[in-house]
Length: 97
Image 1: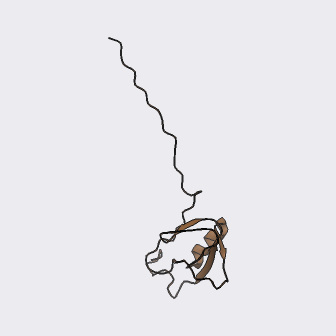
Image 2: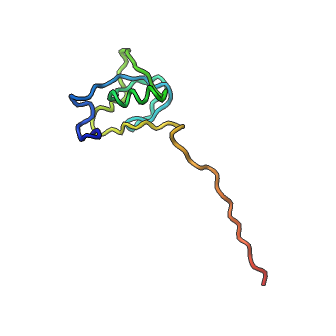
């Protein structure tokens, strides 16, 4: 569903065939560079603007179709995931009796 409660890719939304430029996690799958997929026009423009994907006119079958069902539309990339891998060492001092 989109933000207006209509199914994604419904009659009021245009769809775009795209190709990944970087590895992306879309629709529950990790797509390597050059993988074709289908998404709605707004999401496609956002991915193009961020440099994650480009329009694809080839005849390749899409590996993921984000316009079907409840597939998550947000792309996850290594740049969008921030984790703090540093652990803080804690030390305890004993009181001298």
